[in-house]
Length: 257
Image (cartoon, rainbow, N blue to C red; front, side, top):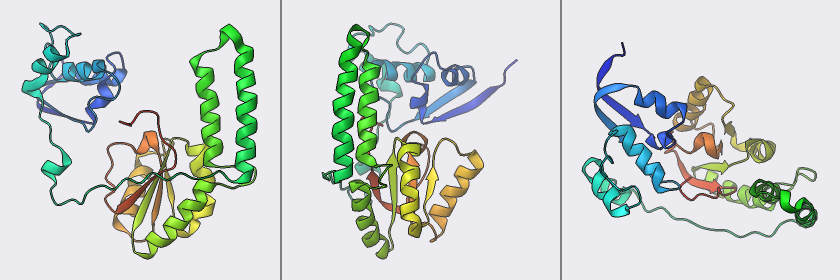
């Protein structure tokens, strides 16, 4: 017989947004008198995400609710929902400044990009009725990776910009984070160019012990000035307050992520 706990606290509860996922089923199997759930992004894609998360906390919360009525859904989850914005809870934090920078591709990158785009469109047209959204996304992914880094010439306009930025901010005593959704195709290619900042790569291939060690070194020592993070591995559940600067080397399609 399963134990029953007084209190269950679920951090990053958006990880239970899929009702058929093993994580969701495992969490729902735990019996407790009270459940608290925390998330910075309770709604990532669609309203069904929020419905599933709320049902993880309170299974019958939408029992008498029309799932297609937003107003009814909002009224149903209001009693268990407490929202706090950063500006309300952390008044001493300075405002976040977002800067979007547009860069021209280097000549070698532009040549490869144009060639890959031209050939990619031909390949898509040849598929005819067999064409799927996955084929289109694969081409977009290839083009994004070329924009990040030319693996043949070992060049990148983004890398050149990043190195200029790092030189200035590290002289001020600051640290930085670099995120990419491509740990192998981008982050590992950047690493040799950034050795002077003692960077580490934080991605899904690391053990829990190694992840903890990397975070502790970054947070508690002056040795590492730079951390390169896979977007999926580093987007939740870690504290990196020693960095004042964050660079998104490429952007995921979903703003919540």
